[in-house]
Image 1 (cartoon, rainbow, N blue to C red):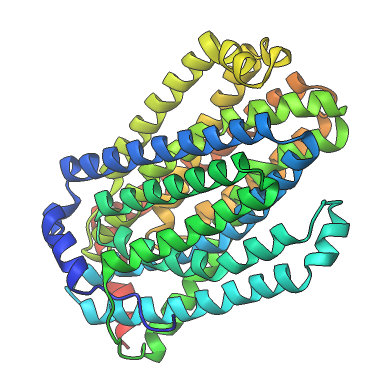
Image 2: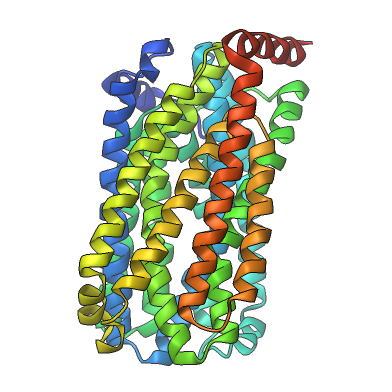
Length: 453
């Protein structure tokens, strides 16, 4: 486990298949659009499978059992913040190393990150497994075993994130997309099969853990294994300095994506809070689907920045795609949202088309703001991430003021996300005006000099 996630012979073949050489054509629009489309389709399929699993669990489990199963998913989503951090860090520096065709540096990076991921995963596992009885009582769960089962999978879950980051950094989007399909298929098939056989929440949790193990194996087969040289002190320093901006972005994302549901759960009556949770569950799909665009843009922007080239064109194209996705989802929610939710979850959800469409609009605004922030983060710029973090504070304040009913909460969401997108857009425009092509190249040379001294 502590050996590196390198870019071995198997990845060499993948890179050749995807034509991701280290020259600039690998970041042209057509190439990225094709890769992003493959990744987007994979994420749509993966999300559809996960929704199918949620519907199945809601139908087959009692409400108390479903709450316990959903708790396992919530814990996984909290740990996902660590996983995405590892993936983004690996993606950025693997992409930069690819520009210089420095495969050894990527091997060293991946090995260093994988060892830290293993340590972090082990700590999470110890907390879940060692404290299983405590967590069972704290969350009023029926059994401690789901915490143990989930804990077993944590090291595999975090280590595979490094490998996914290497694939992302090398712009090998089709293999990266396949990892999401594998994860979903194993999770859904195992979870549904075991629940149908009568294993309940434990069976659903086994499905989660099995998917972690399966995607870990798949990623390792894709990228191969090498024995990396140790990272230099300077390389470690540059990498560690990048952890802060990534953490700021992900903390802001967690607050924005989950704060409204928590406030609804706290202040609305249980039935109304349940309806709001269903609206949020579906409405946030816009954000998760748009993540395929951010995943595609991130390493390409990092490569262009390393070459001293502007990546604003990539950003504007990505924003256009996310805007179209959001518009389509909003229209679909307005026309069919209530009908679909009413048939899937029950008649009490049949009148939510309007609120769902407005929620999807708010999420679309957030997805566009997040894309701008991610673009700047790929080049190591912190300001936009700080703006997003401030936006999460504004959102929380507005939600608290509008906590009386579903419509007020959604209006607060729309207002907060509109403010956030405007602020992030202004920050981007100021930065773009200050740098320009010449300033961008000069800044790139200064960063390169600092990294090599």
